Every structure is written in structure tokens, then in C-alpha cells.
Amino acid sequence: METYLKAIEPLYVDSWQKAAHQLATPLLCFGTPCIYFVATMAGYGLMRYVNFYTEGAKVMALKGGKKLSSGTIKKAYDNGTFEVVFGGKDVETLSKAEVHPSGFAPPDWFKSVYNLAQVSLSVYCAIFGFPVVWSFIAHPFGVNLSMSADEPLNKALHYCICVHFLSKFLDYVDTTLIIIGKKDKQLSVLHVYHHCSISMVWGYLIHINMAFGTVCFGAWINAVVHSIMYTYYGLTAASYNGKRLFNTNPFKPYVTSVQLTQFCLCITHALVVIAMENAIPFELAALQFGYHCTMIALFGQFFYQTYFVDAKKDKSKKKAAAADDAEKKPKKPKTPKSKD
Image 1 (spheres, rainbow, N blue to C red):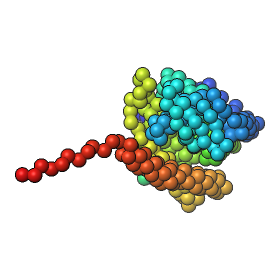
Image 2: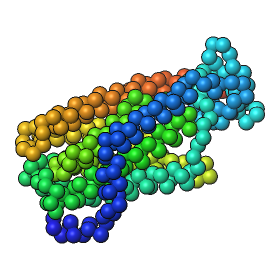
Image 3: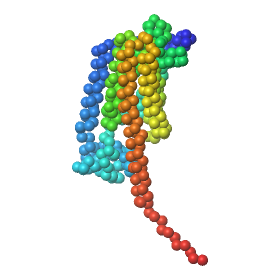
Image 4: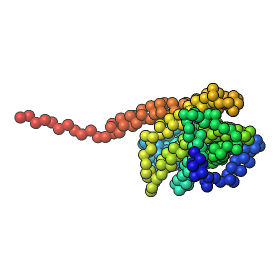
């Protein structure tokens, strides 16, 4: 372990740790997420209550019930359906669920740079947090590792927590892209709750000088999961001449499963801390246990809705579309059999 700690020594950026300590002061630690919440709710209100479905409005709609294509609303009906023109020629009548307002879409290069930055930062953070699981058998989840700031090991673990804390503010970019893209369905309770609360938790731990030892496990495992998540997002967004380079759809359920596994591990960590750790107050372990229970509940609901309810609906729509296509195809006349 001493060799490892010496090897990562040149990678420290002292200014980042200082910035984390400044942001961890109560005013900024709790004030910044509150500002984020107010701004997010304002953006949500704009998306939900401003009518973007007027005649002549540019939209993205499901053409033929299959492909999301750009179009223009030709006519809006009182029953919530719309006539949408695609390419100035094809006209289809679609429900509101199949029509989405056209928001600002960042250029492909920005998506690539952003996802690469997230992956790089997550891997960087995980490198410093790795010592917390180095001797997992002797110290499961880093339990009963020293909590002293003077311990050489804790220089790396504390720095990992500081970098992880800073990364939570970078995550606000995700929300900004959702709002300016007018993708109101992606702005879920889970998304806003997690982004508001998690920076408060890590900032509070840094402020009360408890960001050492086993506490680092949560930061490390989240950094590992984020490196997987943003690699997936980056590959999903990768395109050339408007065409996606990779089909990442089969991996989507596995990425969500990895996230759920993270929360289960953090709950287990909290229970192990309560049972075995001597230096962590019971209240902090209980806070972690309760917080990740809420995350499992919200993520579990998302998993069920996405991969069971919505998947079933999509399957039914595809079957119906296939049946319609089959009816529209001209049937070949049967050739009479010749009699010998």
C-alpha cells in the first residue's frame, strides 16, 4: 500500500481540496443545492405550464410510431392530438405522448467532451479511494480503518471524498441539459432529490471532519459506478453524420442494475458500520442507511416502470404497428393450381 500511495502522490491537486473545503461550509453546502432546486423547479414549471404545442411549433415526434423525427405542428385539436408535418410532405395525427417540444440540443462534440470529463473525473476519484477496499477481508468496507487526518492512508481517502464532493456540482450540467432540451419526462423526483441531497451529505461530512476512513467507501463505489454510467452515456451519444455508432440499448438494464447494486452495498456498509465500527457515530450510519433506502425505493420504481410497464407498452405498440403494416401490404393473388 505504501508503494501505491507514493505512486499517486503526483496526482494530487491541492487547489481542488481547498475548493471542496470552502464549498463545504454550511452556507454554500446547503445554499447551493437550494438554489439548484429553485432553478430546477422554475425550469420544470416552464416546461410543464408553458404551451409549446402551438400551430407552427417545431417538435420531435414519432413518425410512423417508430422513429423520432423533426416536424412541425400543422393543427392542434381540443382532444390533445396534433397533425404533424414531416419534411413538408408526410402528415400524421399523433397523441401528445408521441410529440415532444424541440429544445436546445447541445452539439455532439459537447456531449462527447462532457461524458469524457465525467468518466475521467470518476476514474481519477476512484484511484484515490481504492485504498478503502484494499484489505477488504481485514477491513470490510474500510471498517475500523484509522479516522485520523495524520494517517498517510487518509490523505488519499480524504482527497477522494473532496473530489467526489466537487463532482456533485458538475452533475448539475445533466439537469441543465434536460431543462434547455425541454425533456420534462427525464426531470423525475429521483433525479432532483438525488442531485439536491447528495452534495449536502458529503459537504456536511467534510465540514464536521468525518471525511476519512470507512466513510470513503460511499465516494469510491459511486465513482466506480459513475465511470460505468458515463461511459455508457458517451457511447450512446456517439454518432457520425447523424447516425449512432453504437447500439447500447441491450446494456441499459445492466447499467441500472449496477446503480441498484451500489445502493444495496451502501446499505450493507451502513449495517456493518453499526455492528463493527467504533469511530463512526451511530447517527451517521443510520443517516446512510435511511438515505440509501430512499434511493432504492425511487430507483426500484424507475426500474419497474422502465423495464416492465413501459417495455410492455412499447412491445404492444410494435405489434400493433406490425399488424397495420401487414394489412396495408397488397396481398398477392393466388395462382390457380393446374389440373393434370
